[in-house]
Length: 373
Image (cartoon, rainbow, N blue to C red):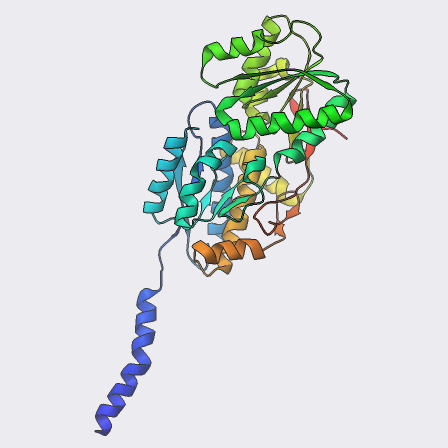
């Protein structure tokens, strides 16, 4: 009897420990990345992917999260809603705990039902549409909302002489471009300027580029605001110049990738662009990141790579504090964490997963983005 009692006591003490040990995960922690890696917004998606890579590699070199390496599953949304939704479903089947991306507001809007249904914490480096702000959902945004950018560039444009302004926007990213057009136009009107024309095109529809430019008044425009990707912004400027239009040009934050200068050359000199960061920052963390980026990818880092690095670093910090759990535990950790040590500034999410960060106005000068004082 005594022996049986002792055996039962031993089993009662050891069985939970054995079961806990068997249930402990030791493999990699999987996270997902979703961005446009093909098509006309690939510069944005590739830059974001590169930022994620560097953030994960740096963390893995230090031991990973809770002693486990982080593995990234990369997916291409092709700037297509159906493809983006399918990509999220595929990532969920791969058991990702969180998602970095999407990189455009239109794709964030498209996949919101999927990430909500799966309770998948999603941290977008660059989605800025106002329609995504102030919601108690699973989407977190590292960049501030459109109004923060548009108000500042409207003031800069007005100070530079903008009084009669035309806007051309891409309907392929409608959630962002229509929001930008509205916010920028209202800001300029408050200052006393006039929006004399608004024209739209659809990226990839070759005929629509010419139609949008040809619909602009031939005279009386002093500033043309382009709300499009870097690739399309360059094409629109070239089309405008071929038609004989020679206003000063400004662009939305979307166009501010390195592809704008690489493709545009002298055509984009003097343009104003709203930016999330300063490429001439002396912050030591940023300088180390920029050096690693150049060495690894043989190009300069852009706003998307910086935003993706900050997004990934914050998400993995929260994942460690949630004991490697996703879902509601990770959402809570993201909201309660911070301020996060970004590459150029400290920042944190508000109660709805939005951020308020510094916005700079850059001018293209001598083939570089230079922040205006």
